[in-house]
Amino acid sequence: MSTHTRTTWTARSTLLVPALLGGLLLVYVAVPFVAFLARTGTADVLARLGEPQAQVAVRNSLLTATTSTIVATVLGVPLAYVLARRSFPGKRLLEGLIILPLVLPPVVAGAMILTAFGRFTPIGATAYAVGIELTGSFIGIVLAQTFVAAPFVVVTARAGFGAIDERLERASRSLGYTALGTFRHVALPLARGAILAGITLTFARAMGEFGATYMVASNPRTMPTRIWVDFINGGIDAVVPVGLALLAVTLAVLAVVQRVGRVPTVIDR
Amino acid sequence: MTLEVTGLTHRYGDELALEDVSFEVDAGEIVGLLGPSGCGKTTTVQTIAGHVNSTAGGIHLRGEDITADPPERRDVGVVFQEPTLFPHMTVAENVAYGLLPAGVGPDERAATVDRYLELVSLSEQREAMPAALSGGQRRRAELARALAPQPDVLLLDEPLSALDRGLRDRLREEIARIQRETGVTTLYVTHDQETAMALSDRLVVMSDGQVAGIGEPRELYESPPTPFVASFLGRSTRLPVTPPGDPGLTLESRALAGDGGTPADTGLICLARPSDLTLLDSERTETECTLAGVVDRVTDLGTRYEVVLTLDAGGELTVETQRVQLVPGERARCTIDRTDLLLFEESSGRVGPVC
Image (cartoon, rainbow over all chains, first blue to last red; front, side, top):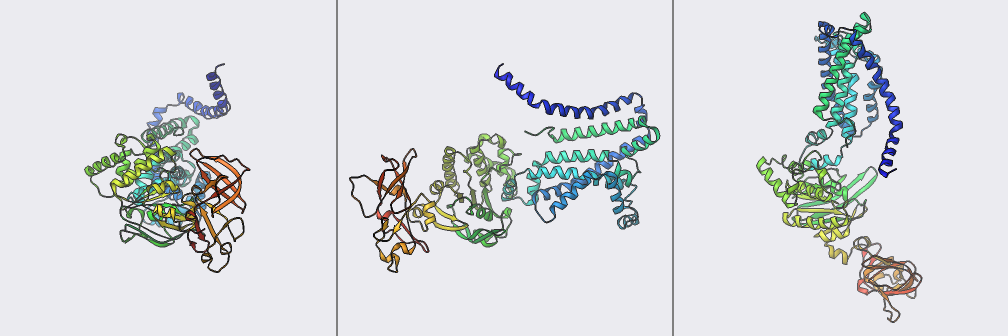
């Protein structure tokens, strides 16, 4: 056996066990997709998607998820930068708080939002008095989605900022740039990949958000809440059209973001 | 003068990193800030650059107090120990980076970038990304980037420490040339005394967060103000000083002791450069500064040998020599010219050359 062949065989055998284990997981994830897509033959997908209720749900989901992602990014990226660059008392607690919505059951998250911003809470009542409904509204959906999805952009952006050598920022300051200018010209471009990955995850999470949204604003309907209502009324086959639409829209947006942002799909070498 | 550092003190928590550091750098001068690792050199540079706020003391640049100014308002160019080229910009964009906040227009910016890239011989790499440059090219690009905004002072924080010896020597000469051509006032931080001696008009030697000596390189080498400077700036070996009659060096001058006692009682430290010590062969007569002992080890350093003697008077002595026929275990004697001795009183620094 030649050295080259032996090396190749060794390299393959090294990856055999992880490949087998990973393969099992892939199969487990793929099977429900295949099974679900197989139902499309039995459901009149295009006709159902053409119904006004479905179209409203698609529009609402796109609008609310985009708004939530923008809010989470505009507020979350600066927070991520502060967390990556500064040490202060209570920082660990703050970091735990940011991650908490990731591990919290979405229904509980919804309950928490209701206890803070519900119609009969001080904040909710005040907002209602000036004509702003924080629950059962477009704003309510955004509140629920932002609460649940914002940690994704904060956590990934923080990792991105943390990976930047602070000396680059010092060099920038010594070359005449303020802290803000340095953030814009050095930190932001260098953490771009991580930030875009975070934005992608946040958007995907917001698009698929159901539990908290249903608690806070079951109306107007988003795609996930529409799917739930369709399921209750018509069973699995009734879910397929909007479910497919949700899948297609999310995948399309993710593909565009990743392509535009050139987010690496594997470790950036 | 261009840069004046006065009573600079800095603490990291309870740890005192700098204590009352004061020195000046004149216009166009290149001053070497020399000292061992952890002596406070980088903290001093970071404080001058504004990246560390000193606990006490002041920094004046062209007569203006900049102690409380943020880094971007200091007109201080910095080349850091590790490469800090922006990896998302080309070499030319890196060099142009500092010109934008200085309000330099596009045409002048392009001309300045061309000029400084030519100065550091990187014109052909202007469109290259930093990752495509060699270690030496990166250092030169950083130098061009730091110089382009024409800072009042250029701080070079051990810029050559990560490079191999050959490249380090070549770049050292290049830095000297660039400094001569631009005339920029420079503070060069290094732990390498050879680099410091070769580059600097004056040296500031630091030890344990304090200034141990300031002066021209040759002056500091030949007349070090403290035992630390003597041992750090060039090599030195300690000679035993003993009362008359004992087998060490007998210091006859009572005036040195000042109290009529033996020099050993007064806490004197006697140092010598290993290259100033001469091994005596059996035919040569002893001089008044002769020490005897047993050869402990002989090390071949290529251009010279290093002989370590265990002295009869106690302690070890290192002698540098071009030729050696001694082997470990053999008895040997060495001598030194009395004017080459570096004598210090432990409490008050240097006393003078006496044997």
